Length: 153
Image 1 (cartoon, helix red, strand yellow):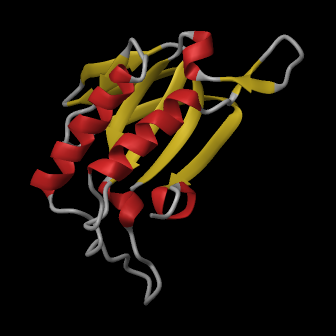
Image 2 (tube, helix red, strand yellow):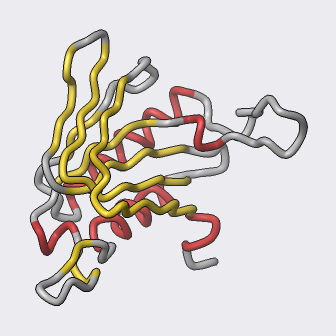
Image 3 (tube, rainbow, N blue to C red):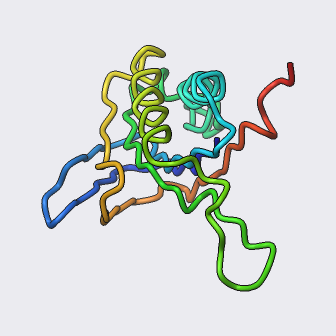
């Protein structure tokens, strides 16, 4: 599972011209689900994001988490994060999980964020064409890949 996160002072998502999710301060999280991902990756990533210290303290150091600042999350499903561009110029999405399974893990991810103390979790519409606006604060952006950051069993 991979999440592209951006610290934001505001973010919103529209589907068919209608705003379906909107936050003020917090994180915009674009979530890609790979075929081999499961609940363990989902739960780990939600916990990591809730506790990731990417917000500045009184000394202008990134020492505070979403929980510390009472921040929100705008979670957007994004299968294109699973792109494989090793061969040629047209990315392959063969490693992305099929929609039914990916949607189940996306929904679980959002619920796990709430269970980890994030009070306001807004979402896009899974599988829809979305217009996402992010006012990146910093800019602070990072990719979190469970294959690289999750402890091995």
